[in-house]
Image 1 (cartoon, rainbow, N blue to C red):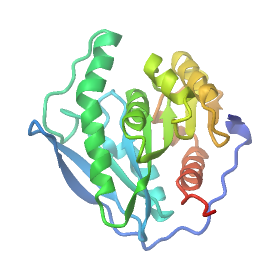
Image 2 (image 1 turned 120 degrees about the vertical axis):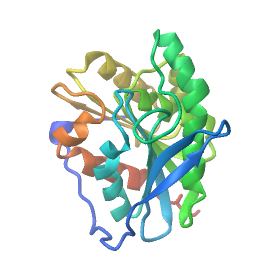
Image 3 (image 1 turned 90 degrees about the vertical axis):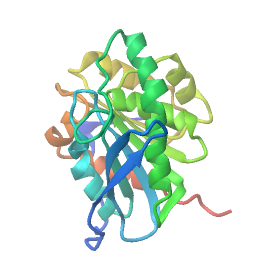
Image 4 (image 1 turned 180 degrees about the vertical axis):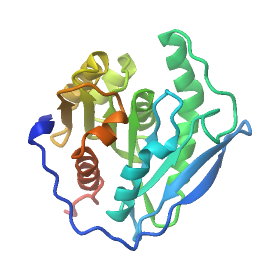
Length: 247
């Protein structure tokens, strides 16, 4: 596992594909009839894809737009979506509870919704359903790891931004079945930074990384405060989701 100090990171990206198609709205209909609102950012050419999971602060999928747009320009289709009862999605919002109750809700309700989002992106024309990544912030980081564990045939990379971790997440990330892991947090966000560092250090992949910023900020707040972060994430996802080398 490689540790990357954010102050030393410089990301180089190739020439972007400025001809990527415009984003478009999608409806994700759950088995119990709830309509979740999503936005697809398609790449101009066939290639991999990434699904993004929000924080639990009520922010909607628009927080991911700068990253999703850049990914599409770089050949990686992206899907953002809103949880139940958040923004323009239907359903009742989750009102919280103990950490145990919250995590149960994430597993039992949001977990299947997350799988639906992955299946939706995988079904899009031009998206390689076997080269998908997930990126999540705060509780969305928990969902990203959960989704990778439940969909090992599809998920090839996990971006985890200051999320919580449970024993299932620890065991999975430490296992050979776990995909490469990019952990991102701010040192001022002490508890989340500790979870993120723990998971990153458990990963056995040589391409797994830990990026710690020496300041405050939680989850997707870092996308706007750290100017190097979006290029770093795009480059890591592009490299991680490349086609496997032919023998």
